[in-house]
Amino acid sequence: MYVCLCRGITESDVERVGAQGLVDPETLSAALGLEDDDCCGRCAKNVQDLASIAARGCSRDPCPCV
Image 1 (cartoon, rainbow, N blue to C red):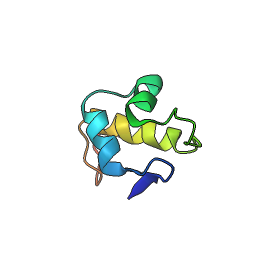
Image 2 (image 1 turned 120 degrees about the vertical axis):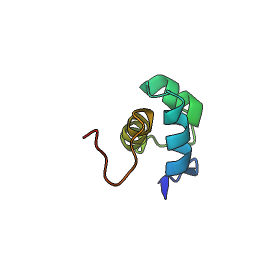
Image 3 (image 1 turned 60 degrees about the vertical axis):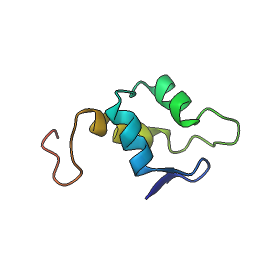
Image 4 (image 1 turned 120 degrees about the horizontal axis):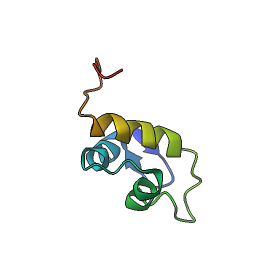
């Protein structure tokens, strides 16, 4: 599923970056290009949440970390 239509970023893209430990908002935005002028930024919160989940090593259903 796409989480950012401006940049064409999918859940898999975010999970891959999160699994690498990139969850800091600035680092995450830079890695995914969310700070570019052609990105509206509305996806930033969801992207950060997904990356944090991936960094903890959780699967989507069910997540034992919550």
